[in-house]
Amino acid sequence: MKFIAHINIMPHKELLDPQGKTVAKSLEKINVSGVEDVRIGKHIHITLEADSKESAETKVDNACKKLLANVIMEKYDFTLSEA
Image (tube, rainbow, N blue to C red; front, side):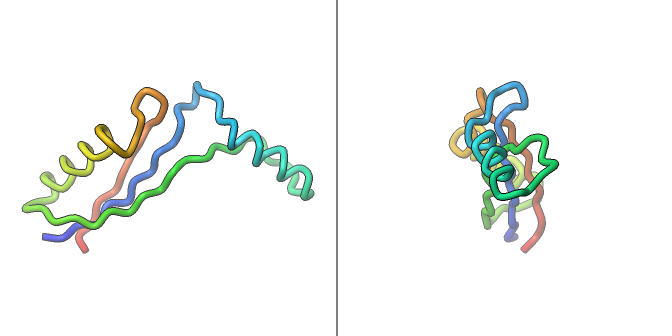
């Protein structure tokens, strides 16, 4: 079966996000007001083959833990759907 994973990776809330701070300050300069906080992360789409949804979830979780996310500094979540 073919699955599509949509993965969101974000820095932990406890950590500073220098990119987000820079964007927040820049938004003020272009008159976008009322922005309290900006956090910048990654969004990844993966299409994969697996025997079952559980197997696909395991594959995506392993990819996140071992390659896509730095679990010390980032958290991740994903949704999985059949292609």
